[in-house]
Image (cartoon, rainbow, N blue to C red; front, side):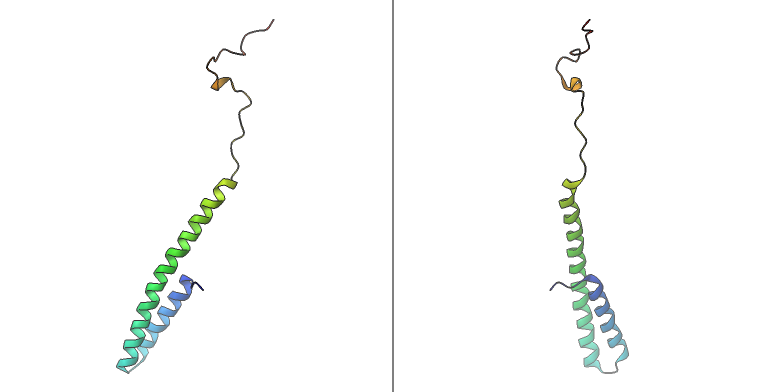
Length: 88
């Protein structure tokens, strides 16, 4: 299971609140360590989510409509006068 960056930020904030609210040093230390771990995981989750969004956009790029082929191919001809002559 991959954690979302929103969940990680919420857990980080929760552990910071626990660290601020406690009077026990060992609880404060553990809460600060947990907050730091959630912060690190939040950064990784954010990068993972950004990669997923950019790869999704790249994968869908081939679904965009392409320019229709030009009906008049004279512009690509080696002889641009071809087809311009009056047949009459």
